[in-house]
Length: 561
Image (cartoon, rainbow, N blue to C red):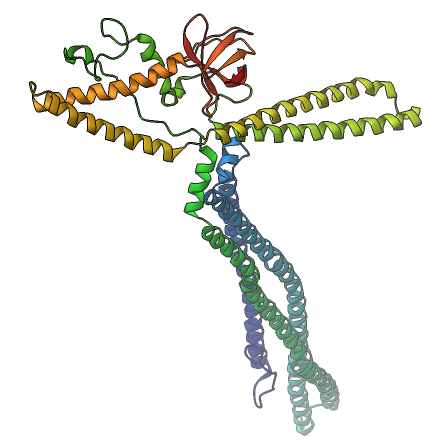
C-alpha cells in the first residue's frame, strides 16, 4: 500500500539485514508524512495570501464607493432628480455590495481553511511524533534483544570451543604415560568445568534466541504493522482534510456568486432605467421660467430726421419733439418693454421670491412651505413632549419642578405661532403666483396673426410709396417707406401706452429703484399702473411727479380699471 509496506519475513534473509531494510522503510514513511504536513502548511500559506488579496481588493472598492457616494447637499438633491444620476448612484451601491461579498470570501477562506487547517496540522504533528517515538522504541528494543542474542551466541561458541579443547587435553594426558595422575585428574576436572560452562552458554543462547524470536515476531507482525497503520490512517486523514480544503476554496467563491450576480443584475437594471427623454423633461420642469414669450422688437429709426421728405403724408415725421428728434421718455419706455432680456442685471431679492421667474417662484414657495411644515410638526411634537413631562412632574414632584419647563414651553409656543404665520403668508404668495401664471398665459396665435398683419401692412406701404414717389430711386424709396411704416406703427403703440394707464396702485412698502429699469417709490405713494405683471414678479408704474419704471409686484396693492 504505497510507502506503507506489509511486514513479511523473507526466507534465508539475515535478521540484521532485514532490520536495516525495515529502518529504511520506516525512514521513508517518516519523510512522506513530513512532506504531507509541509504541503498542508504550504496550502494554508497560499490561502492566507489569497485572503489578504481579497481583503485589499474589498478595501479599495470600499474606498472607491466612499469617494463617489454623494454627501447630502442641495445641488445633489437637484441632481438626484435625473435618472442617469440615480443610475450612477445605484451602480455605486451595487459595487459596495460586491465589495461586501469579497469580504465574505476572505472571511470564509480565513476561518474555514487557514485557521482550521493550521490547527489540525498542529494536532497531526503531535500525533505523528507519538507514532514515530513508538516505532523507534520498538526498533531499539528489537536491536537490544538482537545484541544480547549475538553476545550469548558468541559466548556459547567460545565456551564450546574451550570445552572441546579441554576434553581433548584431558584425553591426551590420559593416554600420556608420562603424565601424572594428578595432571590427568586436573585436566578431566577442567574439561568437565568447560563442558558445564558450554552447557550454560547453550542454555543462555537458547533463552536469548527464544526471546529474540518472540520480540522479532511481535515487532514484524504486531508492533510495526500497528505503527504503520496508524501513520497511514493519520496521513489519509490529513489528505482527506486537505481535499476538503481544496473543495472549500472553490465552494466559498460559488456561495457568493448568486449575490454577486444580483449585484451585476442591479447594475444592468440601473443602466436600463436611464431615459434621455425623461431627463430632458426633468431639466425643463426644474428650470422653466413661466415667462411669456417676448413680442417683436420695436424699430428705432435714428435716420428719420435726415431722410424725411418735404411731402406731408401719412408716413410723416414721427411724434416726438418739435425738431424731429425722438422723445427720450419714449426711448426709455421702449427699452423697458424689453426688460426680460436684461433681467439678470436686477439684484433685488424679495422674501416672496418675486424676483424669480413665475415657475421658479412657485416651486420655491412650495419648497419653503414644506420646510416650514416639517419645522412646525417638530415644534408641535416638542410641545406635546414638554406637556407630558410637565404632567409627570406635577404628579410626581420628586422627579422635577414643573415650573422649570415653562420657559421652554413658552418658547415652543412662540415658534409654533411664528411658523404658522409664515406658512399662511407663503400660502398666500403661492396662491397669488399660481393665479398670475394662469392669467398670464401667452396668446401665441393672436401674436402670430398680428405679426402677419404687420408684415402685410409693410408690404402694402412699400408698393404704394414706390408708385407715388418717382423722383427718387427704387432702393431709396423702398427703404424710406419701410422705415416710415415701421416707425408709424411703433409710434401708435407708444402713444397708447403713454396716455392710457390701465389702473392705479398704492405702494405698501418703500422701494429703492437702484437697478436698471426700476424706479423708487415711498410707502403709501399712489402710482399709475402702466403695465401688469407678466409673470416675472415686476410691474411697470408711473409716479405722479413723472418717471416710469418697474417695481416688485408684491410691494403694491393694485386696482385695475
